[in-house]
Image (cartoon, rainbow, N blue to C red; front, side, top):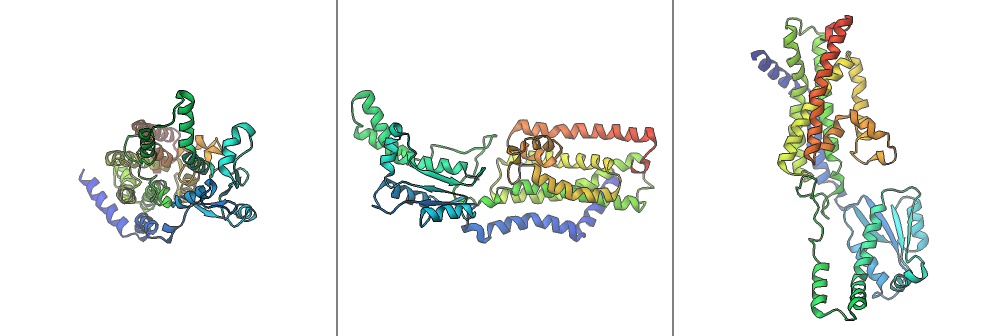
Length: 386
């Protein structure tokens, strides 16, 4: 036990003195500060063009256009295009993610749609555009907001032959303006603050990026182990003492990175319940430790680990749903995700069942490692890495 404590402090001091590792640690809070104080606070991820012919400011299409522009937030910004041609050009040249062309008399077009079947407005987007589907909901909900009273009044009159009473009108206005109609929650029941209007959408991938940096920290610790092994630092240790010390080379940097990562997640507001966050982070740290230990047996040379670091780092960003879910376009990526610890973490963060699944590698990988070590001994290969 005393030897393990000594090795722990030696590894810790060595990591703190290593500029590359310290830079990796500082990269996590640097991302947080950069996002919080970036000029991007006034920008948006998606810009949406609107064109409506000039007319009376009281008409429905004019009111709808003003309502959408006023409802702009950091995720989606609506703006008025000068003409229908300008709108199409903005979409074609990626200045706008999509565009909506409102007719001159939108209210009449909507009321006659059930008879004529003629579309009331046009949506302009690039072919195979996936990002803008949710914007349809924003536009359609705004239209429904304008028509909902007439729809309700017509329905009541058809069923009862009576008009809405003043009390009905009062209740309708009350609930129409209410902000409690939809409450966003995570799967574990905690509040979801990410979908607040003032939330900077740039922080959404932060959790995934943090998970990738933690994996990078674990693989960095593996490199230190290779360096010391090549320098014959473990020759005087009994074989039974080498395994826990080898785990320390991954555990110490991952623990430090985990503390920085957890702090960043709480600072940015992307966190769920504190208990869930801490539990998931602890299990994820265990996942990285057993994953890197198993990877060391599969890649028994320092050069191979060096080559694997960019593969796992970039691959995790692509395969895992860090920035976007590419499995919607390439379904086979769902199977590739099974081998990335980052995906294990992102799947487990908001559900107890997901955290239980994260424990599976903690038990399976050590067993596979023991079997692989015995196989090496059986064939008398790679005995120096055992």
